Image (cartoon, rainbow over all chains, first blue to last red; front, side):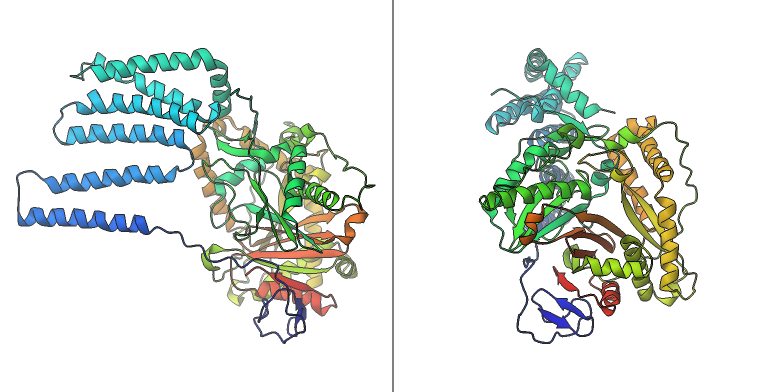
Length: 220
Length: 419
């Protein structure tokens, strides 16, 4: 063990300088012990994201540049910009909630639905977002949650809330039908029907679990 | 596959604060360390950990977010002991990740238990570690310890799971009227450690000698060391900042004041304030003042009031129906505002007592906390008192003053640091 003559203390671990005063320690017979591991600095590798960010900037800037050099009738660079913003938005949520897959699926359904409505509206309202995207996203999510829950052997409480939420989402398109907002009704009808069956099944088989789960999550 | 019905538990009063304010700079994780005289055997440690967990079911829970409050959900995750490979007090709670709130690691002769503060306080964690060490040594040295009495469970499982805040607060006590807010306290400044790591400096010394020294000043160990910390900080205060008081936050273990054997959080804190008012300080003067503040704060009446105050915040109907994410933001803001009223903190976790027979195997125990500001923690085992400073800053002048004071009075100190 080395001894610091300035601080009058023994220094147990291996080091050249006193941790308290910074003075060089005199040599001693015993060099000191290794008490703490040397932990290398932790660099988070965000290289892929940085490259994607640069590519996004290049695409947006060059589309505006091309538009200025070769003007066209429609303002397509704006669409490129919005497209890239949509992609990043979606990606952000995907990376954020890395640990909770059913929750992530539900979030993606909400994001995709909102973005689809937005795009549909932006490029002249054709109604495809309500007719196709939302119902198909709901059905897809329902199947996906179930399959993932089985594959990953999630326990019921890990996904029941999200299954429930998706079932309720899936009934919402019934309103679109009611207000006559959809021109092509098959996906919507299938989605609503499946959701009702799915929700009923949940309630019939798992009403106790649903109640427990709600008690837990909603306790005041 | 049949679902097992799983239990869940509400967080106790103090625990509610930690998940809201934990971040990468201040992880709200604390570490307790048991240093043996020999290399740690990971396999035996794993066996010991498995056994210990059976007596501490709460340690197997994960922290989850409800709509209004956080809650613990009992999990069936099995913890693995790991070779120490993370900075001290590395984060343990991650939003939306389902993981246990403690980790057991080892390096050479040391066994480290790191715990997220929402799970339990120092007393609870030490209790867990005592169990772990008991099992470790009795498995490893079966023959030698075959006659040792079985570990006496100090409490039933339900007592250990007890929410003692709720149990011990009474509605009748008059509302705690603490309108008199502390003034802005002196803040220690410095260069941040790389990657916001925590710098730990541990000083290990004879408990008896320090106690004798405290007695020379006619006071107790905790009051003596608290005063010494104030004195050490004062020496580094720039002259133009000396008009601000030094405020130390000191946690109080409530188990000694109320009947409780909980292995969960049960503590309160008091602020020890010393205002130099530009005067020249005298160490004896500081001790007298600190002793008086300890005496005033450590009465049942005062603690009752504080308990009531914190419980009433939680019981407030309006606070209850606010969604959790908004609660989190409010707690974070209040916490930020309050942080400039504290200079540093000092916590004496106390004396650890194990079977006499283990003395030949255990060198010392120590404890340290994640540090948003300079923090001091101490504990003793046998005749070894270990005082640990954790700091977000590279500078170590206050630590130097502190240990220098003791060394000059004839106490041999062994210093260890992680950075």
